[in-house]
Amino acid sequence: MLLRSSPPVNMPKMRRKWRVKVMILLALLAAYGSIMLYMTHYKPPMERVVIPVEVVKQKPKAGLAAPLAPVPEMQAAPPVPEMEPPPLQIRGRR
Image 1 (cartoon, rainbow, N blue to C red):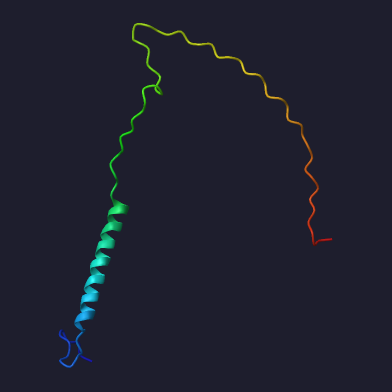
Image 2: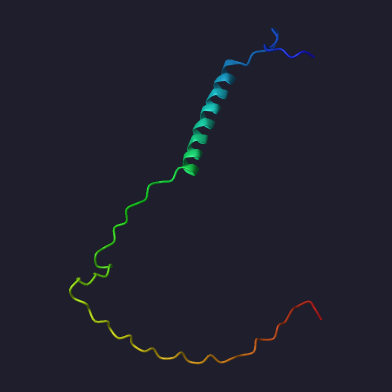
């Protein structure tokens, strides 16, 4: 069989409605592909975060050194009693 660069003369042509549908489908696929490419490959810019002034501890001035506050001593945790696990009962086995 010989390969030809052009279709034969008696080959049926695609109907106009189908051509339009195929073109619309290709356009939608191209739009979807470009959106997916944008969403997966482009990094959004960093968002600016505004921190309220009350939350941030103010730094002491250069000339004045603030004395460190003493750390309060914590009480020791009560001991945890050791208990044996409950017996394991599996139904259906003897």
